[in-house]
Amino acid sequence: MIIAIGADHGGFYLKSQIMEFLKEFGYKVNDLGTYKDEPVDYPDYARAVSQEILQNKADRGILICGSGVGACVAANKFPGIRSAICHDTFSAHQGVEDDNINVLCLGARVIGTELAKEIVKVWLAAEFSGAERHKRRLDKVNEIEREFLKR
Ligand code: RB5
Image 1 (cartoon, helix red, strand yellow):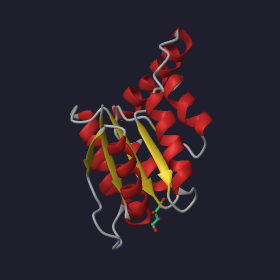
Image 2 (cartoon, rainbow, N blue to C red):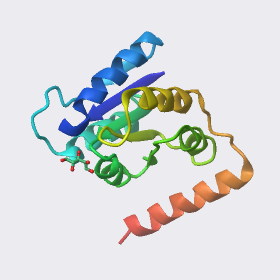
Image 3 (cartoon, rainbow, N blue to C red):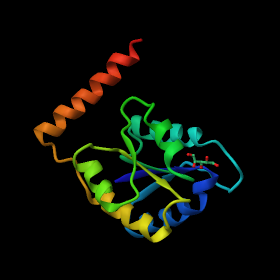
């Protein structure tokens, strides 16, 4: 599985920790920046990670900013991206199993490195259940996207 990862300055340090962790487990990681801790804008990294997934260059993405909020809001603007902030392991696996999220957002100023690693591990191990009710709900989400893109 190929993971695209991006962070703003707030998530820069946690990104390097998560990347090391992912590589240890044999994942291929596409690091889309930022590459230093100078202030940058989170939408640029949300764009980079989202496009990597939409262009099939990565299977899933991880976005890290200070709170996880800005990156998550920005990523969800890309049709086809389903991102969520998960700061607990339950949301991390259920977000994939039920809601098929393809981008995990983390807030580096909210959670510590060890919890972040646990969350990433659980998120990566989870798969969409494919259950009829979840497909139906996701179809409705897609319908909202289609309807409002037309305006
Ligand atoms: C940057 O200071 C901060 O606003 C950003 O990292 C993030 O927390 C936004 O949601």
